[in-house]
Image 1 (tube, rainbow, N blue to C red):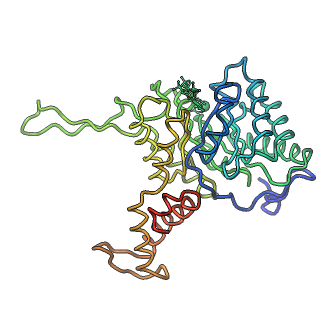
Image 2 (image 1 turned 180 degrees about the vertical axis):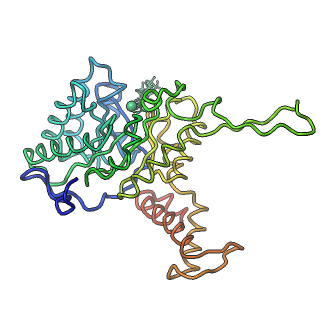
Image 3 (image 1 turned 135 degrees about the vertical axis):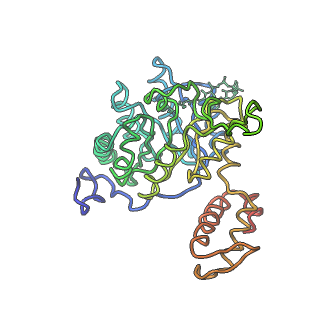
Length: 349
Ligand SMILES: CC(=O)SCCNC(=O)CCNC(=O)[C@H](O)C(C)(C)COP(=O)(O)OP(=O)(O)OC[C@H]1O[C@@H](n2cnc3c(N)ncnc32)[C@H](O)[C@@H]1OP(=O)(O)O
Ligand SMILES: O=CC(=O)O
Ligand SMILES: [Mg+2]
C-alpha cells in the first residue's frame, strides 16, 4: 500500500499534481459515438451542444478494422473543436488489448489537454489502475499537461465487482465508475442476452390465494442490477467519485430505458450512457431532479435554517438527516440550473 503522504504526489517527474477533489459538473449522460463512423464524426459538434459528456469510443462496438480510424478520428475531432462546457472523454481499448498502448500514448500526447477523462474498460483490480496511473503520469509529463487526466472504470467483470472498493481507492485519478451490464453478464455467466435492463424471468411471484389456489398469481419483475449498482455507488461515493449506470441496449424501448435510468438515479447514480441520439433526452429528464421534489426540498431547508432540530412540514417529520437528503436534491438542482434556463425557472432559482 502507498504511503498516505505520497498519495497526492505526481507519479512522474513533471506530471501535474493529482486533484484532491473530483470536479462535480453536470454529468447526466455520457454520449457514445464512433469517431471512425463518418456520419457520427460529422455530428460530433452538434451532439456536443446537447449533452453533458461526449465520449469518443475506441473499444467494443468499433470494428477491429476501424480501431485505428477511430483513434485518428477522435484525435482530429478533439484538435479541431472546442466543446465549451461539454466534457470530452474517450473510452480506450482494454489494458490487455493490442490497441491500448497506442490509444493512450497518442491521445494523451496529442490531445491530452483537450480531454477530461479516459474511460478504462474491463478493470479487474487495483493493479490495473496502478499501471494506468503511472503510465498516464509519464505521458502527461512528456506532453507538458497541466491538469491531470482522470480515470473512469467500467465495472464489467466478476473480479472487478469483487474488487470494487480497492479499485475506487487505487488512485486520486478515479473520477467514477459505470456499470457494464453486457460484459458483466457474460463474465458472470448470467443467462441474459440483453444489454442492461430487467428480464421477464427474474421475478418474484405473489403467494397462492389460500381460498383459491388455482387463481392466477401476479409476478413482479425484479432489477437484475440492483446489487451491483448498490456496491458501485457505495464504493464511488466513499472516495468522492461519481457512479453512473452504463448502457441500455434496447434503443427501441424508451420506457424500459427510462425506468432503468431512474432506478439508477434513485440509487445515487449521476448519469447513464446514451448510445443513440434518442436516449439523450431520456437521460436528461431522468437525471435532472424533478421540479416538485426540488420545490419540496427547498421548503424543508427553509423550515430548518441551520439544519438541526425537528419540525413538521405538511405532516412529515423533518430533522438533520432529512435536511441533508433535501440538500442533495437542491445542490444537484443548482448545478444543473446553471446551464439550463428552463430548469432554473422550474426550480425557482
Ligand atoms: C456494451 C457497450 O459497450 S455499449 C457502448 C458501445 N456501443 C456504442 O457506442 C453504440 C453507439 N451507437 C451506435 O453505434 C448506433 O446508434 C446504433 C448501431 C446502435 C444504431 O445506429 P443506426 O442504425 O445508424 O441508428 P439510426 O438509423 O436510428 O440513426 C439515426 C441517425 O443518428 C445517427 N446516430 C446513431 N447513433 C449515434 C450516436 N451514438 N451518436 C451520434 N449519431 C448517431 C446515425 O448516424 C443516423 O444519422 P443520419 O440520420 O444522418 O443517417
Ligand atoms: O461496456 C459496457 C458493457 O455493458 O459491457
Ligand atoms: Mg463492455
